Length: 601
Image (cartoon, rainbow, N blue to C red; front, top):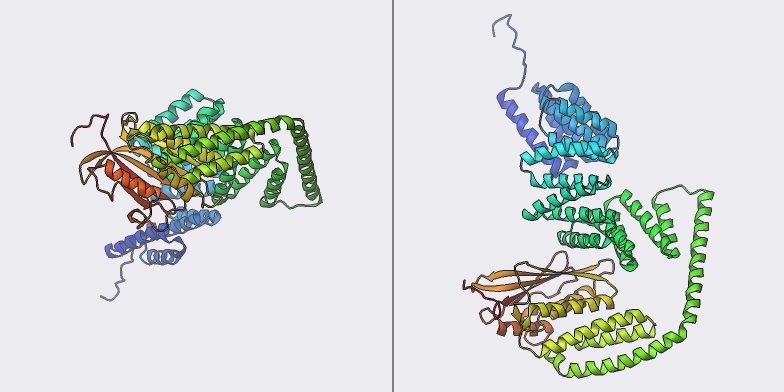
């Protein structure tokens, strides 16, 4: 170096240093989503590197990453602090836009909605269009929480335009459903119905399952607001079954809670209890606020319907979980409530006892009549079980258990329930008697037997499980032929072996799905019948269908299918696979023949 000359002052990073900074930036972004707890050291290293290489943009971004990390960890105050530090340094409009958006998210998460709106507005004023769809969506959510519904619809509509231009179907459908939900709150029911129906149509067309669930839930809520509780229940049942299959607890919670409220309106109090209890378990796993809200609803439900002991226990639990400091007055209030509930229950029990005494003679006469009917029914069942029932493979233990259940209902003077039980049982026996002597029956008749059987078991086991039968619209069940009693043993297996040993906190769910299919290895057109349940599953799933030394109902069903499906192999007429985390899936293939005209493949 010549004497008197000074080295040039560095003004920014070299290309090599810039590449190093970009690589570090990229790695930090990956770690923020994969391992946020361990990324702080990498961010500090990145900041020192940016300082050393004199890159103001990357230096500002290092503070942005620190704020983003604290936002992920739930420390919104620290997040805002570091976002503001990044904001003071940067002159990059895109980064500034992201900073304002992230500050808005932090304020929204901490409930400071006014500051959040200001930050989102500043983000839009930076001139950058990056993430503007998310900005509009977040602003709409805030205005929804503030109950400024017209503004919420306005910003949802702005976000929808951007998502629609980008062909972002999932977010577009979500916004249509959100607008429909707000219109329902505003009692603009016709507009709400149009938005939700449109969202459902697109979701069905493109098989976006969770948006189908959300649409059905919103329709169920709309019908609930209109007072059409039957229609509301139908929509919610479809949403509930789909949500169970998808195992989405976040969406299952509001569905279960609304279903409980609908069933309460329909005066089906026993089923309402089941759904209220299920929604409480789901709320416990989601958030403290939702758990408290559900506790309030269950407490009021039991109080309104006279179960004062349960009402008191949930009130006490609500007080404990609310973390309210209980002084002398609070303790006195609880004791008064307990005294009131328990004494009210005693009064109701006394009133019921007096009513029972006044109709005791009528009940005795009814009991004699039922015993006579029971004797005749047992004799009829005995005759059937010695002939046609043996041929149709109907399990005699089921008949024995059914008769015992009827006798128990008679003895406990539950005459209305016993009557219903007898009616269902007689229909089932008549169906079996009529069909068991035939070589082939229609799929329609077979499904009637399955439905009657499952309704019997539902009544017997106190609605401890649900079932749903789904049939592809291109199948005419009255034209498909099959051997009698091949589907019933699979349904019986799900109830007796899948749900019977299931934990009491879990409600059994059986889905029967019937579709057209092509049996690939033989190129034969078949009807595919799937039985999917969430029971305990089979311990030895690999060997059960290969067993040859025990004539179980499943083994017999498989042998009968072999001879009916002459074009198919024995091993694949009836298959099994476990469903995780627990459950079973049986698949039956029934070759199309007989009444339906089938073109050759």
